[in-house]
Structure formats: structure tokens, C-alpha cells
Length: 240
Image (cartoon, rainbow, N blue to C red):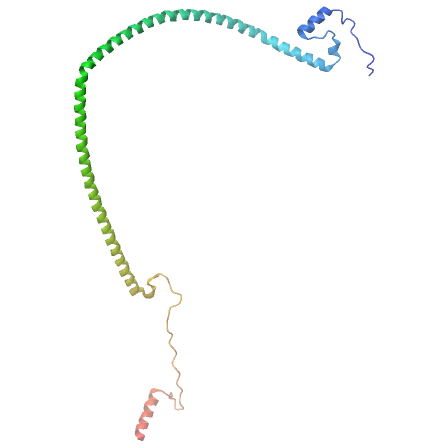
């Protein structure tokens, strides 16, 4: 593109006063070609137009709310003035009532002080008598509690001694019972008394040896038998 050839607006610059005011008020350029020749300027102008339209749409409800706000504030201001006057009147009545109540309260206090001065001596005597009675009761109660505590301590000591003696007797009885049971187990199970339910792998036994076989003579009698021995004895006696 040849940038040496430029498009010019023939009517631009003939309304300088209008151009100056529009630039001052809205920031608009005097030559429309400045917007049309650049897409960025068109985009920026479109954003301004859209923002202006949105603001314009917000204008009517805003103005209506502003009118209602102003009227309401006016009423509130007038109401506040009236309220202040009413409170002033009410405050005067309340102040008078408070002053009257304070005066009556002061009179009542003075009368009570006078009665207190008359009765204070009597009350002091009654209070001292009450304190003396309470001290006497507390002293007697303390002595009774100490005696009862000593009695309970003695009872507890005796109970503890009996418990120790009973435990010792139970230990001795248990020991004798265990010893007697151990002796019975040894008499019943022998060396298995420690483990009566356990089977032994090897039981100690003595195996019998078989008898020696006697030889048989030619007559059919066993040599070394009882009959042979008896005959030999008889023969030897007869030979003598």
C-alpha cells in the first residue's frame, strides 16, 4: 500500500468551535476519518457507546430513587424536629417526676436513719447475744465431733488389727493346706506329683530274661532237670 496517498475529509476543520467543545466535553475527534481508518479506534468508540447506553439505562431508575430518597429524607427531617419537641415535653414531665421521687426518697432516708439510731443499740445487743450462742453451740459441736472421731479411729484400728490377724491365719491355713495336698499328691502320684496330668515318655521297667534251655539226654530226659538231679543224688547215697 502506498502511504504517500492519504484520504482527506474536505469538510473537517470548518467548524472549529464545535470541534473544540466536542473534544472538551466528550473527547470526540473532529475528523470522523480518525475513527474509520483504524479498527482499534472503532472498537474504543464502540466501548464508549455501549458504556454510555448502559449508563443511560441506569439513569431513570436512579433519578426516581433519588427523588424518593430526597422526599423521604425531608419527611424524616421534619419528623425528627417534631420528635425532638415531643421528647422535650416528655422530658420535662419525667424531670418533675424524678425530682419528686428524689425528694420523697430523701425524706424516707432521713426517717430511716432516725429509726436506725434509736434501734441500733438494741440490735447490737441482740447481735452479740446471737454470736455468743453460736460460739457456744460451735464449741460443743466441735467437742462432740472430736470425741466421735476418736471413737471411730479406735474402731478402725481394731478392725484393721482383726483384719491383719485374719489374713495371717488364712495365710497359715492356706500354707498348711497346700503342704498337706502336696503330700497327698506325692503319695498318690509319686514323682509325678508336680505334673500329675503329664504322661511320661519313658516308664522305668525291668524286663525279665528268658530261662536257659536244658539239654535233653538220649533217654529223653532233660539234663539238669529236677528228676535227673534227684536220681543222681540217690545214686550217690547208695554208692556210699
